[in-house]
Image (cartoon, rainbow, N blue to C red; front, side, top):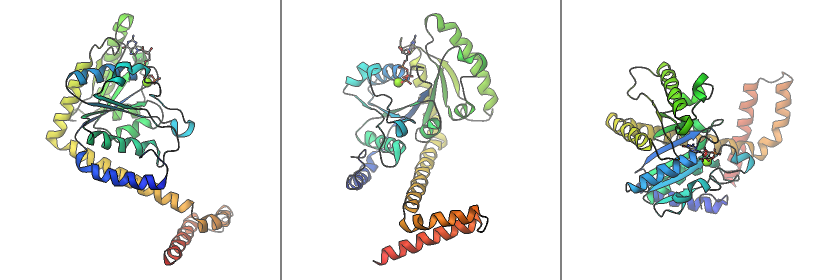
Length: 308
Ligand SMILES: Nc1nc2c(ncn2[C@@H]2O[C@H](COP(=O)(O)OP(=O)(O)OP(=O)(O)O)[C@@H](O)[C@H]2O)c(=O)[nH]1
Ligand SMILES: [Mg+2]
């Protein structure tokens, strides 16, 4: 229902979500990012099965920054999550293809709430580490984990500054076989790099761990970090305030998006826009006055609409 673009479905979906609100929120939300091929799906398969063995219920969602444009979707095949995808304690939802009203961003947030109401206590949100997707995902989770490759640490080329800033934990995956030593070298390099970026006084110092998703090595240490972070944030109140900030950001983003859509699709605005733009280009009207004029046209048209 929430994936439907039909307006009546949308209304129903929002009613449903409202009913579910009191039952959602009780989970740890973890974002998992990393370049294509780093082993995100393999990691989630092993990690998710460990959690289930520990008595948890695990939901896996995906944010695909490219799907809105191309219609592609990560997690499309589920082939790297063979056992997890058939486990009754797991729910895996691929990123929807394009056409979702308000975008994949909205959908993932709403899916998180629905999964929580359905009793999933651990939500894993997978995203490919490209473009803005890290920022988007880190703005909807409690903990942001970045998977890295061994060897890429030599000159730190593999990591973007923006990612370092949102990461709560870096994990060098594929630390097995011939990659075991390079993984430890990368761990040292990233540890030094992170120290330069984070203040000594910060209550949470992001660590760098190594793991092998395929051999299921080192994954328990990752979970321990998540639990430790959760405990600290619960104690100092940051868990609650981070979630509140996220809700308000979402509210603001939705308002902006809906107002912009309404404005740009307004017939009166569309009719006047061309000539007003021309005056701006001609330097006969300042951009600010032009904007005010268009906004005025929009309000007047809304006023007339309401009177009818
Ligand atoms: N040696 C080794 N190989 C691994 C490990 N984890 C994943 N791989 C392999 O790396 C390849 C990519 O793994 P995926 O789990 O599909 O990676 P991904 O990050 O989900 O990739 P995309 O979905 O394309 O972004 C596969 O061939 C995996 O078998 C690991 O811990 N060790
Ligand atoms: Mg994958």
